[in-house]
Image (cartoon, rainbow, N blue to C red; front, side):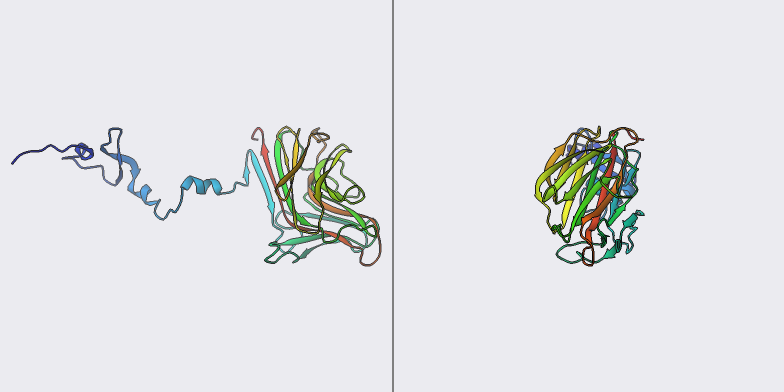
Length: 287
């Protein structure tokens, strides 16, 4: 019988057994070889339907030495939410409460807090996570809220609202330090993008009118605290580079507030509805 030597990929394993319980692979010469992966390790991949790394990358990291994230859905049935939100109110009938406005197939809210200024002229209400937690200049910030203003100012009842990174959640008046969106019909019917540094403010009216629809308000601050870009419903509406608080002690927190200046008596309550709040902080140098 003629002998024909085996060639090709199988030539490397003729007459020898492979290492038990290992995966097979092709080596640098295209020959059959034993991989370092064991049969047990290979079995871990059974049932996968997509790339493992892609799945891992999609998992959200909430905490690390260089990253921190707050996400509040306001769906716990309490105004304190998951993160221990602080309610601050002043004036008759001012209150923060859990409501189901927007919890429907159209508006798609999962939980809603109503922050309502009451029936006195200077009534106010705020929901915040403290007013002295953060400072710009050493980390990048990405802050977003989904809110609704059910009734706008009409001259008979006038109010101002602040949403973002503010330091006036605990009291009356405007922000001393922070970066935020502001609605004040006495200045503009449009959303204002604002910064405040030790009381000196930059207020720029956007081209986006304030409406009674659900609205997403987002601001993104660069790592050095020299530039803030503002977004409404996912669209950039402008950038501010002035009066950004980066000096030690000029701190602020995550919050939303409504405060009246005109109108009193029954039916003059004015509110802001909060669907969710998100804040992501990435440190330039991990802690």
